[in-house]
Length: 196
Picture 1 (spheres, one colour):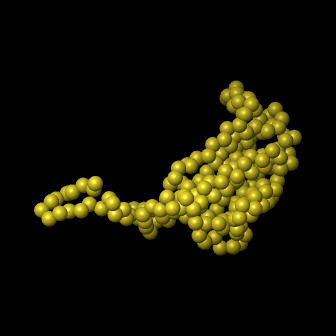
Picture 2: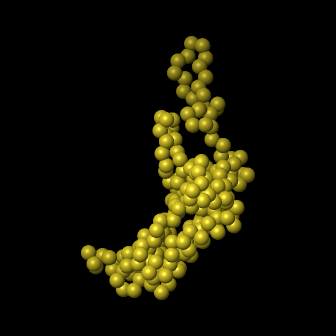
């Protein structure tokens, strides 16, 4: 098991993996129509904080970057309606050789309603970005740069979703409705006419 762990650590030491999930048009549509959100930062592991990075620093970085991009940030005590939360999680493993393997995940969580049963609502991630990096203990502040990079991705996706061209080209019909061009027309005497 140690052999596999150290292989992973060596792989991470020579590069980072970064992936932004669900960048489809449908996902971009979930970023339309809001400019106010709440920011939640998971508490960092004690070994990361001991090495010199604090949860509060990441919270301040993220909120500052979002405000500069034009977002309004809700305080923790404020009502969150509509429910829009940008959640940042930083997980780490001390690699035993002077550093950490770190996973950074940023996700936008929103209230969603089940299409087949409108009485069912839940919270789901509608946008997400993940990075896996390796940092030495003396450079743990670099984690803040990876978080900031993910916030840049979020801000850019939000801007793209809310640009005037995106709004004009992506106006889907309300859920459960069929676009007029797909409504079947049945002429007298015909049965089961398929939409054209």
